[in-house]
Image (cartoon, rainbow, N blue to C red; front, side):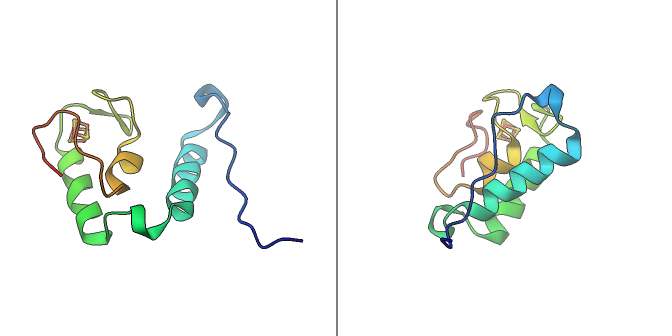
Length: 87
Ligand code: SF4
């Protein structure tokens, strides 16, 4: 048995998941992401605070790019697609 971390299945339709499953999948993806690709806890919280106040945030999704806000915000090199908040 290898020590490899198994990636979570991301092929489910959203209609087949409940909200807690979606959040669980997002958290798993963030955990599996290499630390070198993440922006750091303080910056992550700052970004999420910006998203919380944004009119384009809807049900955890950025309506501009279609990404889950948490997944978009955690990546070091990602920027806000609105370009009103430069990351
Ligand atoms: S990524 Fe930018 S546009 Fe999208 S919800 Fe966050 S602040 Fe708003």
